Image (cartoon, rainbow, N blue to C red; front, side, top):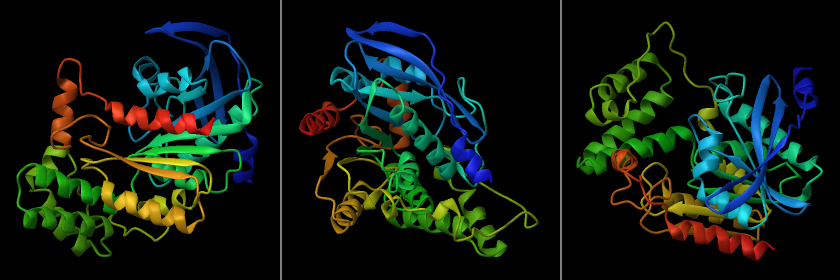
Length: 344
């Protein structure tokens, strides 16, 4: 009954449209509310100024809060899409901006997948949208979300996925801490030890295993610098079950799609493994019979497609703190632009 209610509870609220212009980009904004289960999602749909029957893209962001106003103001990809005639839907995540609801700690990916499906449905039912040309644009954590939402969704006709992992979130996070150690000048042996204990802490079947790993990690400077120390008492310790979202691998879902897809990786990404990711998705998509996908690796960029020396979290923070921030790669934008032109 709860599942049925969640599927049936969908309301799209239309409000006054506002015509806006930013940096010579003209568009029309329509505010919408999408209900998905217990979540009330506030979103904007941005339309090119003129026309109808628009192709459309849902933005599925990575981890952390979403400020849709900032995304609309600064996103060069969003500008590119609108310039090419696409409508774009961007939301505030539950608990941020105008959206209401709170994610469950153990169901984050599944709850985000439900919201994504409802947003696709909102576009499908919109009178100004071409229901046969709705795509999803997502990065990073969105890989897990899209892997759950898209394989059986017949309303999504294309995907742009960038910096998406091709391993479960335990392995992905272990890779991240290992790479931060190497970027900090630690030896390969030290980095491998951090990787080993990070996985052990997350996958521990007994409290003794957890305790050993936690004690090691909570003393390590790399773990402390990125704020990933973690502890718990034996009374509250519970090993992860096979059904835990921690074991979801995007390749098992996102890698099985047969619709047109563009996968983009950053050469110097230290948060997900770009080499392993490109290879894993290439093999899986090929095995699935997808003959309309492209995999691109952008040289010299980090996880966020910004030009970088090391790709480390530390350098990312330093770049964003500088006046003007980090520089988005034009090769990244060109890859999307060219691929979209080929879809016309």
